[in-house]
Amino acid sequence: GACQPKALEAMAFLRLMSGSTQGLDIEAKMMRMMVSLLGEGGLYWVNGSSEKPWLGIPEPFVMVHGQARMVRAMIAWHQYTGNPDWKGRIDRLIDGLDRVLAVHKDDYAYFPVYGFYDREYLRSCYTRRGWRDTVEPTTEKFGEENSLFNHQGHTPGALATWHRLTGNPQALALAAQLVRFYTRPKFWADADREYPKVVGPERAHWQGHFHGYVNTLRAILEYAVAANDARLKGFVRDGYEWARQRGLARIGYVGDAQGCGCGRLIGLAVKLTDAGVGDYWEDVDQYIRNQGTEMQIVPEDADYLRRLSEGKPPPPKERSPSMPGRSAERVLERIVGGFAGKPNKEVVWLCCSPHGSMGLFYAWDGALRHQQGTVRINLLLNRASPWMDVDSWLPYEGKVVLRNKSAREAFVRIPAWADRKTVACALGDRAIEPSWLGSYVRFRDLRPGDRITLRFPITETTEEWTIPKLRDSQPGPERQVHRCRFRGNTLVEISPPLAPGSPLYQNRARRYAVAAPPLHTVTRYVTPAVLQW
Image (cartoon, rainbow, N blue to C red; front, side, top):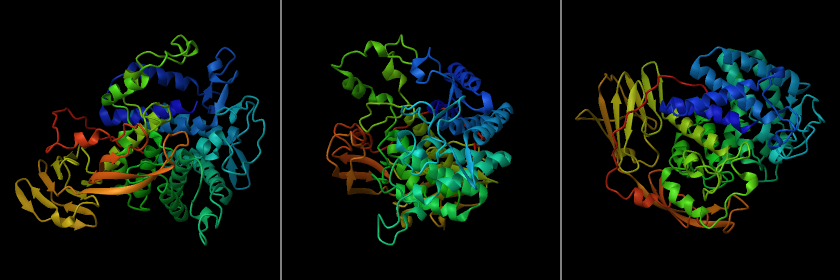
């Protein structure tokens, strides 16, 4: 209902990045199944029935959370495939959101949170009987997981994105009404409760559900860009800066330590930068080099994960493979590539894997941008493109090689930790003087086949950070001082671990101890496609 569309959206992004055709047959079946659920009122229904108790509701229902997530997924596939059928589906679903699900009052709108089933994740579901109660939410704590924003705050962003792509006026109008409601002071921090003389509700300060608020901030920003509302853009910038204060944003360890939190924050930081509200590429670089990738389940985790299972009984019969929707077959192999829900990597949830994967895409998309013959390299990550390839030796060595294909000009952002006086540049084998524009080095009059090399010393630092425990269920003290060693923005060693027994970063010191990076010959996939997300 809610998480499956997240996976569908992420699959479009992952295929665009990698060019992989693995599992296309399975993906096609999943997509056909999900499209078949688009039904009455254009909405995305779940076929609940008494014969499917695992769905939780014995009749067909609409989960509000899943509607905008399905819109986002269809927007991605509409662009990725060019299939015009997606447009009709999206327009009809938006019409259903507006006419069927939303309650309109004065100049604002909201979605009710009381259906006919009082159960977590299901109480805000709509059925053919309608809503049990359309009372207006009075605090942000209304809704699933005690968060109004977590299950509906992302909606205006999907609507605004669709308006920007197609000009759909209904989408923009509903987005405006929802944003007017979601930005009301009652949903944000109380004035003077945090700091004297600080009006928290006007600065997007908040206390509550990290994922819900970050999603809502991004949605407000997407509407603000579509409507060109400068005040709302500043509101979101303040909210982003506030969101960074929980945990250790230096490495993207934020929110409640789930693997999806960092991915969401990467998306918001990139969107803010694209909107011209701030320059957050340094933040994105810190996020993606650390939690943004470290929370992913990789083949090297196999031995650790097997040890977690040692001595434990087999799954109970009610969770046996014979029960629909659940399987204990080849679990370790099948979760590789997913994102963990906790710092000890003992769980993988369907919210974390799509959002973690989307975090990879957001960084990949933002790393290199092209417009009218000019390439802008914002992140010194390996990246192949039709215009220029980037080969990065970071964090092993301060070296980046640009292999030009068609660009006439390039801007390369140098990270904040690098000493600009030490940056050396060469065109082919000839040394050239770097030309600076802010934090970017500019290269002009490029020709196809040009090779540009940038070199600068890697800065290694040891820092002490007091990191709070981000989950109440997590063992260990409420806050603890950690000694962190960085090479550039990459955390290579932390002591003690982020959480007792956590494998995060414990193998990095050995991995990055080598004098030169391990080199592999690979075939790189290159796509000219750019998706608006």
